[in-house]
Figure 1 (cartoon, rainbow, N blue to C red):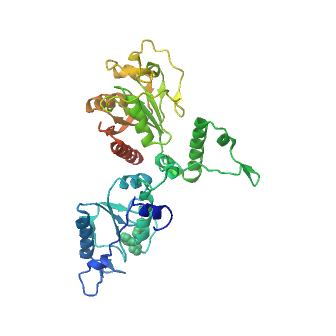
Figure 2: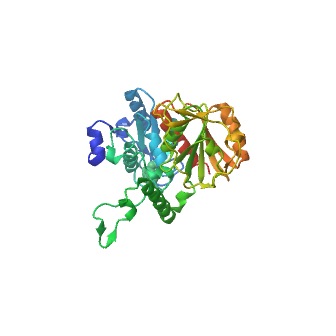
Figure 3: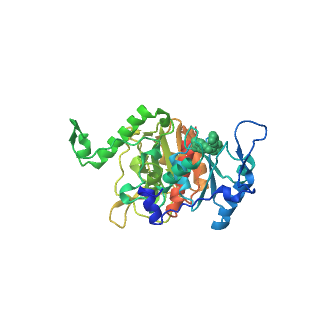
Length: 387
Ligand code: 4H6
């Protein structure tokens, strides 16, 4: 841990790593902490009491009950969402077993999380702990520089990273893909998304069944669109958002696919008023017909925002069925953010339109960075495991 990025993180005080030797809490003169397994069989088992005392000593030192992670091959395999959720904790205790493992009773009493780093066996949990510390550290503020940022990683969409290139432009007769030299950032982002998908199909097709294209739809008081954009960015690298205060969108047919994920941000979800986005991006990845001529779609009023841009005001009198007359799913998962009232109305409507509501998120989402991050992690966790 003393070299490279983790070494720097320790030196600049972003993270601290302490070790506790369970043997120091042995109850015997010999300082042994293992004993024969009841029921017989090969190998030794770690006694409960030394482990219990070791964990208690840490609790006493930090003055609170931290999450206690047990590294074991008998657990769900660590993924990026779990890593980011653990990174929110101030303290983490990682318990490493040796021999054949630890007496079940002390695990019951002390462990909060069981984690495996992969389906293979190690002689002890320590290398797993190092892997966990390394992965978690990347999400601790101050550990990565701006250039090393962990903010936009495609693993968060359950997709593999796209290929990377640097100078020279031609190497061993192979050129860098021309699009990367074009300077067209929107096109480049699209290309990278495509490459990520291609690569995932080829190398990790198992990931694709839990990979969704996030489409965020917001409507409601001023700030709804901005909040939708913020939430979308926290949930997905390749997400899109649309402001359904806009009458034009209300008139548009939007048929979502089973691999789309509808993120619906409704009244009650927004904070006070924040700025409106200047432009709505196109809805690539979603099959979108030409705006159908639905006469008399209502609920839009143009106002001039602080920047002098044309913004759209929320009209609460527009009924759900009218605002979303063009919105259809096909077993498309949906996550709803808003007041209980609005969520209730939306659920019934969306189920009729062949969406599957997989999560409802409490409206306390847009009150600050950590609320937003936690909501995003919560959503990713539910989306990833709803199958
Ligand atoms: C708990 C129980 C983690 C811990 C048994 C730990 C792999 C991982 C261990 C054991 C680990 C992982 C002791 C069982 C040695 C096999 C320590 N191995 N083992 N995949 N080993 O995260 O014998």
